[in-house]
Length: 333
Image: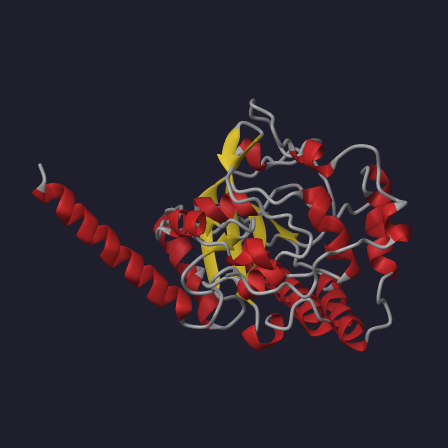
C-alpha cells in the first residue's frame, strides 16, 4: 500500500490560477506530437512577457520572497552570475581531443563540479528562435546536499536548489574562462533560466545517466539529485559515451515518485513528445504546486536512487540481474 500523501488533494491558489494562459504548457512542450521538432521555451524565460506562462512565472517571484534561506541563496547565485568571463586570449591552443576531455577532470578534482561530460552539439537540442554555431557541448553536474533536498518541499530544499544552480553556473563560467584563456571562444549556459540549449538531452548523450519517470536524469552516483550547466565551444573535445544502468526498466516498475507527487503530474507510462516516446511530467498539473512551494523537488528527494550510496547498490544489483538473465537466455538456445 502506498503511504498517505500529506499534500493531497492539492488545490492551487485562485490568484495564481487566474494567471493561467489559454494555451496548455503540454502543447508548448509538444505532448502528443508525432513529428520531431526543436523545443520551445515554456518557462524560466529571461523575459517572462515572451511566453504564455510568463504571468505565472512572475507570480513565482512574489511567492515567499522574504524567506531568509531563499534570499541568502539568491544573493550567492546572483554574485556568481555577475562575475565576468575572461576575454579570448591569443591563438587557440592545440591539443588532442582526448587530452582536452581528460583535462576537464581537473574541475571535478578541484570540487568545482561533481561530473563533467562532452557531446557533439545536435541542432535538435536548440530552442526555437536560437542559433548555436558551436560544435561541442560540455555538460557539468553539481550534487545537492541530501539532508537539505530531503526536506522538499520546504524552503531549505528550495534554497539548496538555488545554491546548486549557482554552483553549476560557477562551473560553467570557470570552464568557459579556462577555454578562453587558451584561445578558444566558449559560452557558458546556466539554469534555471532558459538559454539557447536544452540541457537534459546533451547530458544524456554524454553519459550522465538515463531519464527517470519524474522527468529528471538519474545516475548511480547522485540519483536524480543534481543540477546541470553547459559550455558551448568549438574546441576539439572527444565526446564521452552515453551510459545505461537499467534505470529505465526500473522506473517502469517503480511508483515512488508517482505516488509522492502532490498534483499527480507524473504519469505511469511513457508518452509521445515531439516524435519521441519518453517519460513526461504533466506541465499544467506540476506548475501550480511547483510555484507555490518555490520549486517543490519532492520527486527528486524521494527517488530511491537519490539516497546517498543507494544508487550504486541498485546499479550493481541490476547489473547482476541482467548478467544472470543473459546467462539463462544463452542456456536456452
